Amino acid sequence: MKSNAAKLGALGLLILLLSPAFRARAQGNRTWGIGPELGVNFAKFGRDAPDNDLKTGVVAGFSVTHSVIDNFGITAKALLTQRGARFESRMAGVSPVTTKTTLNYLEIPLLARFFLNKDGKFRPNLFAGPSFGFLFGGTYQTGSDDAVKIENYRDFLNPFDFGLTGGLGLNYEVATETRLLLDARYVYGLSNVNKAGDNYNNQGITVSVGVSFGF
Image (cartoon, rainbow, N blue to C red; front, side):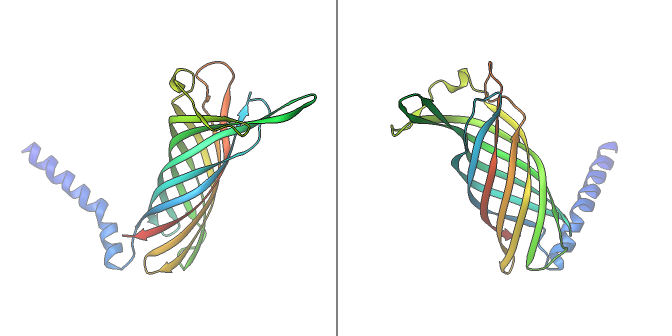
């Protein structure tokens, strides 16, 4: 008897949670959006890292947004992200030598997104939230030499990166339930890139474009 009551209670709770979504669908308003995303990173190391410059890298993946209410939504992204930095060494009488370090992450940002208007074709928004990174490899390149794979990176680099990210988003309806997206965000890592020794953190700016299909 208790088991049946629990099942009925769970079913009632599920119906209650899903009913707003069904009402939105019935009214022709899609509460979910999903689509591909492509962009560029301008990354560097901070904290105890020696002087370094921004290094460009690729960002690619997809994002999912759920609009909870008219002015608020939640976005989750799964991105292959290239971070790292560019170092330049100078010695008297010798031409400067540039070394580029690239770290490849699976990045998963979870963002609270605040829309500045309730509806319309053009919807600017602000967003912020945590970002989780999972390192899966990297390379370094000195001067004009070919990039070299970083061997045994798990021995000295932290496989997990945690940080905060936030920025400005713009989206524009280009067709029914289809929107063109533009996001620009700053990323500040709270974790040490190194397992031990000097404390480096990931920092940088990510600019990406994407398409969202409502469902």
